[in-house]
Length: 373
Image (cartoon, rainbow, N blue to C red; front, side, top):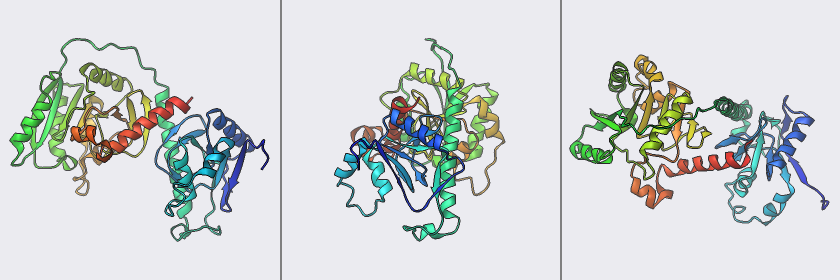
């Protein structure tokens, strides 16, 4: 290899170029990636965990698999040659190994390459099913397309300058408590969380179900009351809620106002996990769904949808799935203001079920600041 080589392109025998490919697009993408200090630029992937749009044609990407066209920049050569730590793990493909080696990796969108279905050298049993490879690449492409649309939508919104009044506002807040032998102790514990937090006007509601299985009719009664009382926004809390140390009343009201201007229907105060995420502003993130959230801010613009919705028999045990499916306008606060088993989260965050996705939000925020236009 010549000493003045700035990059190399590595392709596999399964490569097929898409209709979106052009020499101009390739060269522009390489220049954009180089300008953003990328180590690695991919033509397409069959899977990724999360990503951030950084330009009109490039996404930053975290872990990935199924690539077959790579632009590797010179400054990354040495790191690849010196790496031994994960080479010994036979479970890792080359793609996954590379994705662990650097945070500075990007992928074209739309993809400029995909993978041919049959006849290549490293075909696996799962990939040898007709239509499977096309399906997983299309799924990844569609995910990036959706994230691109979300990012572009929020980029066009200009938040007005606002000030949070010092007036003593109260938000109607409904706390669902599981009807059990421990309900009195649980009520005291939850009430203690809200002690001296006069911004919350609490009502306690008993339920026989766990949060993820909350009875929709009972939930609907709360929303009907909120609508009848002409509330613009309410808070719904589950018994495992605990305030994070960073919770602040003024910031809480500021978050509500900003979420309102951004068109949010639901804002989650914390979440165990999510799938797709887009950083919107400093502390608000668009998300597609959550599987557990102890603290919900629900806006008036979704009241009627909740009241009109009736889950089928097979849907009744999936409260978070149901409410997330009612709207695309969902957001998540970060840093979280609500964390179950807060002390465990603070003392041993690596083992807490909320920690890994909370960390993802920090990574997404940093990537947007460092790489996005």
